[in-house]
Length: 467
Image 1: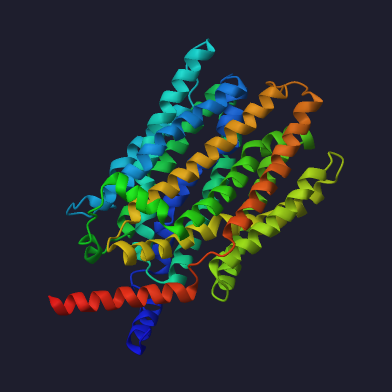
Image 2: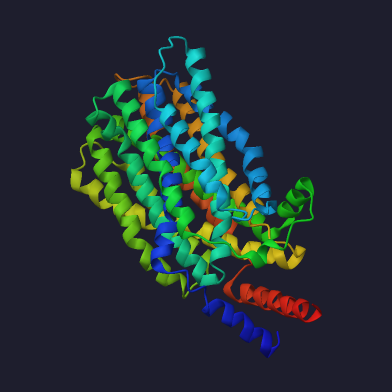
């Protein structure tokens, strides 16, 4: 690397866009608040609790609802990513979709919590599957362009970690809002009627943030000139041949499944294992508060270590903590769970944070290799995996619970109780171990990214001289 290119690379790392202020990062992060409020509610409350305990679907059918919806994502998310890479509207190629998707997102989310007057399992299954499919499309329209905009607004290695930290904090607030779904439904009368009203209120709360995200964000017209010449199928092949991206996908998916397995069964764990379901919401709020409080610490640590190293530390921390959930007993004092929650949260925060902070460097390397900026398709596929991981985790959890004899209300069998305990503790720990293994030897270090930026800068300088 020449002296000139090294200076150019360092300048990009230091001189971020002056518009990227803490306030703008906080407002932009509201997109993650909206998305995670819906996704976390589906994992924590909707599939395992609302569909089985309120709407009355059998667990196996309830688990199929999100799986079918995520099947649509296998096509919708990458296609939406490609669309947002290719459109050249006057208002931009990403931001207009925030306005187009906001209202459908709020409406479909509200309808998911309504219990129609249908008695047959087939009719209920058809209704909730259809609404879930429409909701999935609305999420895709807003979320995929939003994710693709992050590496465009923040260019540097550490700047991307910073904006992702803001997004992650907002995501945690969204999870906290999702935890409040069931208490809100109880406060509004409980049962099907309470959930229907709560669904409307939460639907409004998930649609409005996109107006603020649209106002606070911006795009870089100089990147829009790099229009993709690869076809959709050819582009996906190139994407999957990208070694660093493939490795990032595996470690991210393993971490995501671990998170969603815990989320899918934690309310059942508090209800049937601990025997104190009312402790679920306050314990989760403590857990999430600790997540938020630990993020500035992890951000500081990430300025001294590689991102993948920070991920490994957090995953290992959380993995060890899962053993406590395995051995915890109902007669343990309440304060013991108060201690366990924040210890687990410290590791959880990193597993949720770092993969999204790492995607920008993958996109820069792809630009160096292909000469194109394809944030949309890269983030679209990763966003699809985010939702697919949750759907598969919930389906597996509910399918296993169904086989173990889990039923609506009442006393559960010993097999069902053991299954709840294992799915909440051992299964997530196994996926976290796989995530750490998948992260070994990750190539896009801080130094490697600086070299990529240097080469891109020199390419741009040569192109400018020719023109």
